[in-house]
Image (cartoon, rainbow, N blue to C red):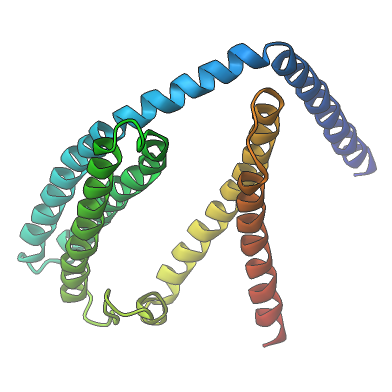
Length: 242
């Protein structure tokens, strides 16, 4: 047992040493080639800015039909009245929600790249903003129909998607198996975002060696990390007291 513990400690220290060496090498190379690296970043940002409306439109054109087909499939299966097909219908509705969420996220993520183009090409950010607004409206109202069909299949479900307390009411109406599924998914999501925050900070540090990033980027990532961590700590302590 002690030998395994020593191996884990040694492996951890080795990984930290390798990471420090890799960070030093990348930082040194970034400082040496700061001018060319900065130019590459600027060119990539400009290219993404001009491509943002096309990427947003592509996400809408791919994800919305996928969501619609999944919804139609679930609607057809729900009319059979059989338990097995009802489960298949719920699985299809999950696909529909994932597709709707994906297209909205893509539109929101590419929108910031167009802001820098406003003085030179004002039509680009306007087009991207219009597509993002359309994407959000489609997502909200389409998911309302999806949730309505879920309620038809599972009458015990409660909550209105237009209500700010929808998530709380929906979770309260879930059974133990569904809550366990939500908890497992939330746990995996928490772990993934922990690694994501660390990776984002490391990438920002590396980029800042070559080109100014500015403190707001670090502050935004750090603030989100603190919110996630201390929300977890608060609710964990609150649960342990009950």
